[in-house]
Length: 239
Image 1 (cartoon, rainbow, N blue to C red):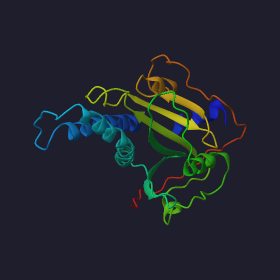
Image 2 (image 1 turned 60 degrees about the horizontal axis):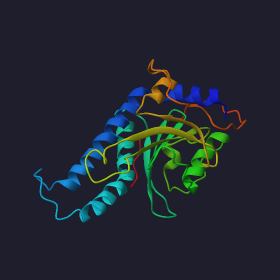
Image 3 (image 1 turned 180 degrees about the vertical axis):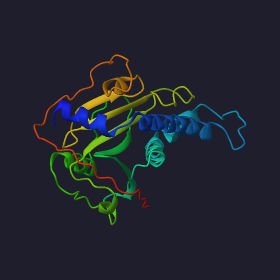
């Protein structure tokens, strides 16, 4: 897939309000998670028994990032009329949420830094491979998937998010990283990546007039032509 093909598809099907809703939902989710752990019901601050609690509570917040991302994706899809599905993978019981924006399939995942390499999983590779062949999705995701999400000839994008490495405090547990990446067909490397929080994605896609920050372009090519076709269905939730 070439630079122009990726950019054309992102420019056509990804809209700034969708990303803005995702950003607001993620930021609010991170802040609410800190409040829930640091303050008791009623909002009254209490003296923490010891700093040894910090490591345990920080792990609780970090473990909650995945659910925060899925909830934020569902909210953004709901607000903007995009279909999505909640599925439990039969192989390991993990819950995933996949949204669809035209020909874009959207996942979310937490990251610890902006240099993070792809963390491959079978379902991610299957979704990523769908934009390299005109075929129906062949994943074992249970009944109903093919009724709502049309994964033929789509391109997978992943919205990654995270907090800085630090202590148990509001600043270090707030949303500090958010970027959009497009993986290759094997989910082994990035074809495209752009930072959301510094305006890079908006600049690359023409949403703003700010100059690009760094490089946001394919970092490897796959010479496969992908035709463009919309495949939207109704929103469907299956727990």
